[in-house]
Length: 107
Image (tube, rainbow, N blue to C red; front, top):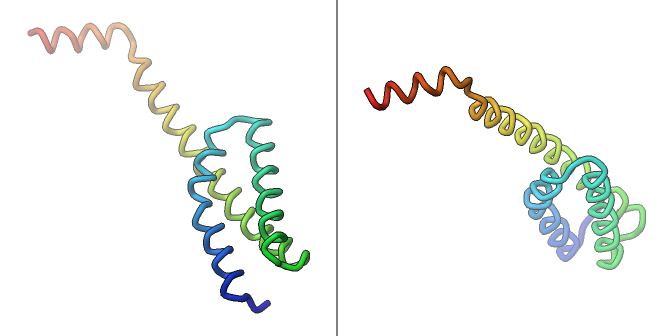
């Protein structure tokens, strides 16, 4: 499918916004994340249709955009989980270890 310069610009802008949208959605949980992804998909579809894309073309491009968005949300979600687990582990230092650390600092 041949894109007009305006269509290409709209798709570039949609793709450029994915990292920020993915970060925002990845910060949500469970049902809210699902609803946010559905809302993003509806928004992309509406934008492409209003910009003159034929229905079939709009659906094809939205499918590609959403694959990328979902992939980034998944990666960011895993990174967030790992960061939280590491932080929890770091903050869960056993009391004996903490007093040993205090002794080392004082002594």
